[in-house]
Length: 164
Picture (spheres, helix red, strand yellow):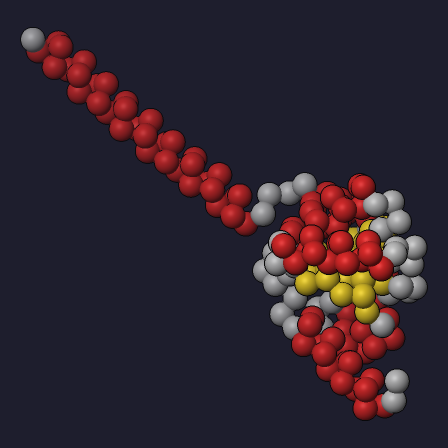
């Protein structure tokens, strides 16, 4: 790679990481090309960006960003999985894929301002995503309103019976 190609790669990495506040890292040294293509399609189906990156150039791109602390995890062949505004989706896909593909090793990541290990990524994968949390919250609000309406109706019926 000549200097211009390296500068272009750093610029591309900066664009890739722009606005991202979480990332999942995996070691792909023992993973075949067919397996990489398989995991890429799984990530793509969830709207997650997955790339095998060049460490030295990625580290340069991350300098001065919120993701800079994760540079310590960049050694050996590293793949990154990330999605804007959703740290859970990359973790879920990576953990699910690693369960059936032992050569795909999750090495850690960066979530909520902290560098995490593989166990941290596993914990993250088990959390509810934004849509699931919203749905649960709305069902709680709806249930409360429904129970309140039923209570009012029951009291009104009881009062009607007492008057009759």
